[in-house]
Image (cartoon, rainbow, N blue to C red; front, side, top):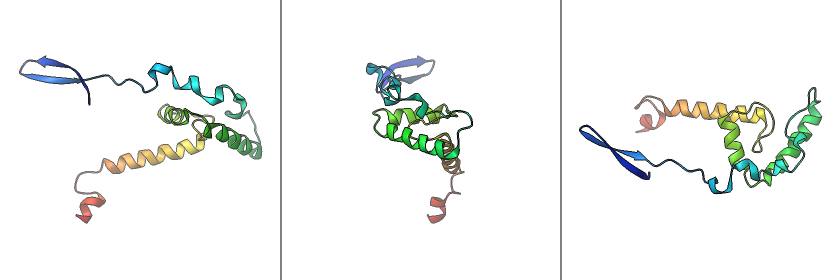
Length: 124
């Protein structure tokens, strides 16, 4: 952790963490570099009443665009943090993002278990 300054409080001093600067701050927002901005936007969002076969084909085409995108990871992180309910973001469909989010919540719950009750404590 980088420390920007030290604040004094009565009876104690506290380090104030330096604000995090996004890695791409000098280049502008990540989405400015997104390949999908130059490609057909229709690939990334479903039209209403799209047949399943057409949806799967469109999503695979969108994922191919994502695979060559220099900001795919930032896009995926954005879609998971928001969370984006529709479309292909960062190479994941909305359904795939729901699975990832469920896994993340489950893992976080496992890590919050009380000390001494987890699998590592049992092996100890």
